[in-house]
Image 1 (cartoon, rainbow, N blue to C red):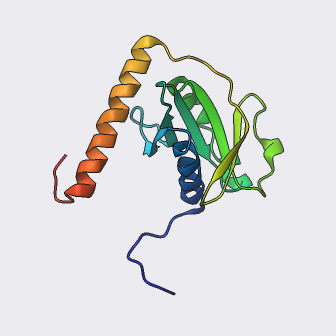
Image 2 (image 1 turned 180 degrees about the horizontal axis):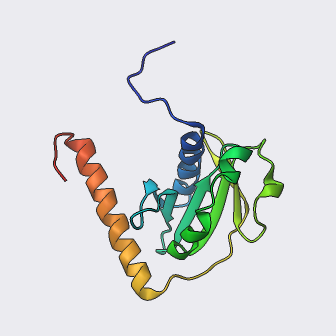
Length: 149
């Protein structure tokens, strides 16, 4: 095995990477493990070129999906909601009224568009500001690992 110094990614993180790569080809800015508020952690939050927010939850197995009962509380934080799973995932488990993305570590494909539920103006402003702050803080830490935030 070649030692790269990079962390080993978990299956859900590999799916998230493929999703982020795909969305970037459509002009989206993405953040993995985004926390819109205390107690909520979204696998991927994506902002479209028009300012629309998409939430993508990555599920690597049936057990991963069935053990997650929190996803309903995430719907209020984006304009569209998607599941990202690999090609072997039993997609019949996923709610029909949500978006579906098939992904791997390198790319993804949107199979079903999540229905649009527009964020209220005040919520959109709060999410946009938090998204920008988190992105800027992560960039700062990458450029200066000793930075205190």
